[in-house]
Amino acid sequence: MPDMAIVDADMMMNAPRGLTSASGIDAVSHALEAYASIMATDYTDGLAKQALQVLFEYLPRAYRSAATGVPDKEAREKMANAATMAGMAFANAFLGVMHSMAHKLGAYYHIPHGVANALMMDEVLLFNAKEAPTKMGTFPQYDHPHTLRRYAEIAETLGIDGKDDNEKLQGLIKKIDELKEAIEIKPTIRDYVPDEAEFLRTLDEMSEMAFDDQCTGANPRYPLISEIKQMYLNAYYGEHKDV
Image (cartoon, rainbow, N blue to C red; front, top):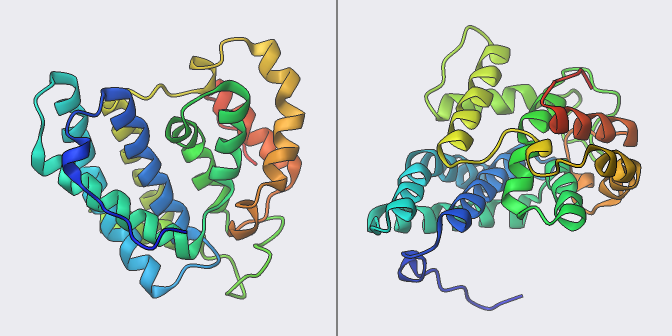
């Protein structure tokens, strides 16, 4: 582990569009997973929520600056801070099954890590938000699932309203999808892995390896391998089926 990290936005001013997009949405995934983690604390919660507020505001600006070739100094500095805060959050609260699945997508199909997280993001939020999951986290902090409320708190932080927590969750997913579109991340795995037969051939192996990934243990809903497989299929075809 390093003794010190120097976060210098000057090093990021000319980052290309693809790197800006992938690393920016990766920071979003870090904050989302840290906030939902069974290891979350008051300290990591504050870092995660502040990071998300900044990311949703400044990532599109940073991406546009990369597209035009005109550096946006404020956006780049804000993104550097937000990515660091999200990193501090997940370094202490850890991550979840979104990263477990993204790790395997990246290993098998060379999809940039942040993009792989983005492809699984909607499915994992819907999976974790179930009020009565098949299995809770391995070391639950609470006597009942509470992840839907946690996601609703993130929605509230981002100014998303709704008549109940489910509506706020849907609003959060909509806002995430709008962000992905703004930074030109395609909506499905199939957009990046057009060989359907090859994807289906590796699906069982990827699902088992994602289950064994070190990040799975901190997920608030402990997944079955069959549930991971269904999330991959949903994300591949862009057709949500209940998990």
